[in-house]
Amino acid sequence: MSLLETVLAMCGLNTQTSQEVKGVLEWVEQQGGLHTIVSHLQSGEYSEVVNSWLGDQQNVALSSDLVQKMINSEAIEQLATRMGINTSDALNLLVKYLPQLVDKASSAGVIDKKADLTGLVSQLMH
Image (cartoon, rainbow, N blue to C red; front, side):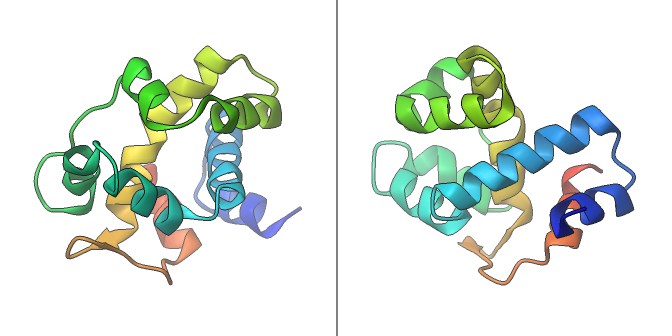
């Protein structure tokens, strides 16, 4: 059992949710980490959306159409392949988890590069 799987089990996640979170977290790392994703999105036309996730205000909600515009199709396809799902389902996972991951891993408008994995996953599920 990997460290990530151990953390997910410790947080009491069911198998499906655990696999979703694991897949998205592994994909985030494959993309260079949450900090890299946030920096990329902030430098484009989606800075207002991403800044809502970083700040204390209400997170701007995502749609699969918006995610498809924000993140290149190759990266979305990588998540789909990693998870063994179609790209539509991969988009839905990013809609569900990406804003929460950024929100929980940030404070004062900045991604905490030393975010505790156990704490992050636990917060994400509550």
